[in-house]
Image (cartoon, rainbow, N blue to C red; front, top):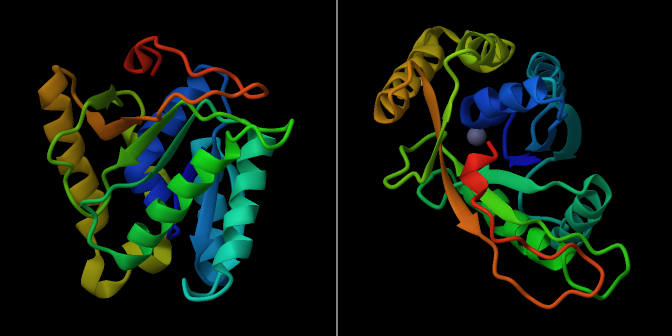
Length: 218
Ligand SMILES: [Zn+2]
C-alpha cells in the first residue's frame, strides 16, 4: 500500500515495484491525497496500468481536517491489511510530500495499537524516490522487466508530463534514475527505497512483526 501526495508520485516512486507485485499475484493499493478531477482521472488510468487499487481522498490542501484524515488513514490500513507501506522520504523537498509522510507514519503506527480487535500491524515502511535522490537506499528492486510499463503509467499523467515546459523531463528523469539504481545492483533498471523497520511493540490482536529479511521478499 502506498500513500502519495499527488497523481504521478505513485508511478515515479513505486510503479516498478507495484508491477512486480502484480506478477506475484498481489494487488497493491495506492492512496492519493491531493488533486483536482483531471489529476484524479489520470491517477485512475495510471493505477490500471500498475494493477493497483486506487483510493482517492480528494483533499484540497493540507490545512484542514487533520484529525479526520488521520482517522480515515487508520481505518484504510486496518481494512486493507498491507504487509508494508510506501510513502515519501524525508529528503523530499515538496511540503505536500512531507505532510503525507508524517501523517501516514502516524497512522501506520496507530493502526497497530491493540486498542481494537481490528488492529493491523504494518511490518515495514519504504520511503520512495520521487523528487530527490535517496542518499542511502537500502532496497533496490530490479525493475528491468517493468520499466516500460512504469513509464506508460507515468505518461497517463498528461497534465504533468505533457505540459510544454515539462515535455520529456519526467520520463527522462525516471529512466536515468532507473539506470543508476540498476547499475548499483547489476541489473538494467532499478527502483530505490529506504526501508524503515517499524518498532516491535506488544500487540495482542495484530500480527507480530517478524524478524525475517524483508528485502528478500520483494
Ligand atoms: Zn508529488
